[in-house]
Length: 83
Image (cartoon, rainbow, N blue to C red; front, side, top):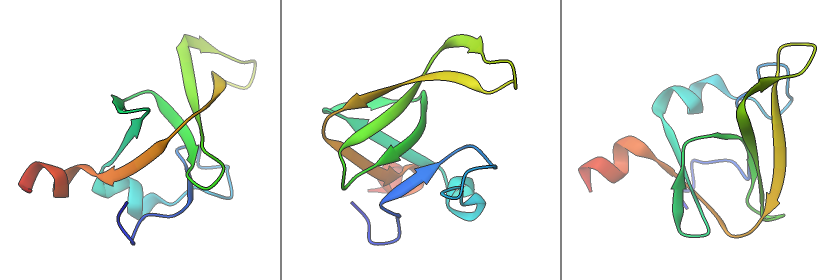
């Protein structure tokens, strides 16, 4: 994990863990050794990710998510493409 990535990050602008500057760089998540592209939030220290479930949304328009436990490895997509 790069030192620039936070322990916890969310894609929801209303979350206290949202960081637009980091998300603009392109963050990839490797969960249990598999790259995931439907991650809404992650926490490395606690070992979980919130994955969006299909295209279903709640009454406020937020995607429905499920929390899954496992090894979380965030990385910057631009760094992995060059290296």
